[in-house]
Image 1: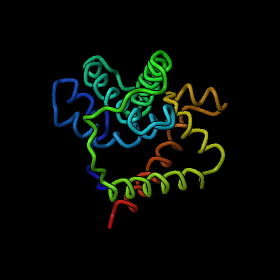
Image 2 (image 1 turned 90 degrees about the vertical axis):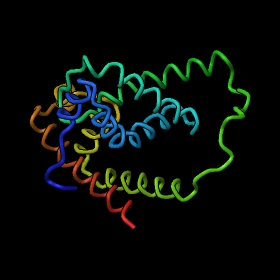
Image 3 (image 1 turned 90 degrees about the horizontal axis):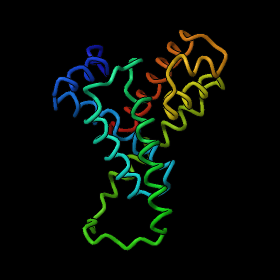
Image 4 (image 1 turned 60 degrees about the vertical axis):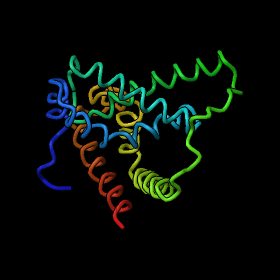
Length: 184
């Protein structure tokens, strides 16, 4: 990553003003984490893809009124994703688990891309597992469960600044790990 990376607040502000390029940048930055959050909740690849897409549709509609509390959009997206996953699971229960196959699903699967993504996720999970207990909890609360800095700090009995600073270091470490696995 370069030092001139635009933070999420600037991208959110531009997207709120209608910039599709800014929203695309946010999408590219967070589509994978949102997918894996969704997959963890719905335990089905197709449903996870749908939930991830629904999350970004909601984001596009709501971003003009969004006030980003931290420097990352991921906690907010994780919250939206959880709500979309809950809707998907309720729908699944209402309509049964034996839904008919959708004939529009492509027959070809990009196996290489799936392997690269699986390796990236495994590397990220490994990086998170290598963190200390407090850092793992901060990551879980903020990145996976969508807590804000203060809510996470209150939950863990630490200061707001501790959560903010540690999460910044954790994100840098996870991004570096992800970049290493994506580089050929």
